[in-house]
Length: 94
Image (cartoon, rainbow, N blue to C red; front, side, top):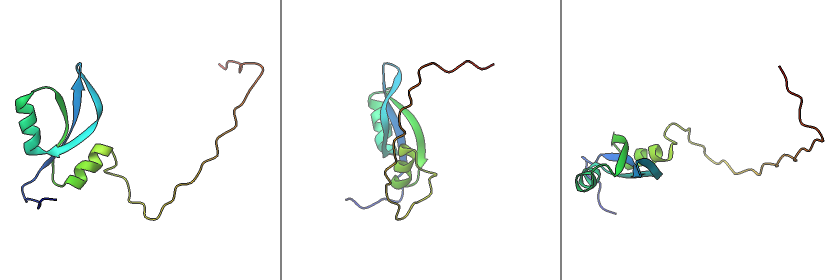
C-alpha cells in the first residue's frame, strides 16, 4: 500500500455503453479520472467528484454513505411466505 498524499481527491463514475450507464459504480482518484477522460472522452459518466477520502468514495459508490453503522448484527433467516392459491381471481374494486 502506498502512502496517502494530502491532496488526493476521489471520484465515483460509471461506464457508458451505447449511450447508457452500464455496470456498477467505480472509484478512482481525480487525477486518474482526468487521464481517462482526456484519453477517451465521453466513455464514462461522472457520478460524484471532490470526495476527500477513498472510504467515503466507496460508500457513495455502494450507495451506503448515509447508513448508520451496525455493530454486531447477525444475519437472520427470514421465513418465506407460503404461496397462496385461489380458485377465482380477486373481484375488482371501485
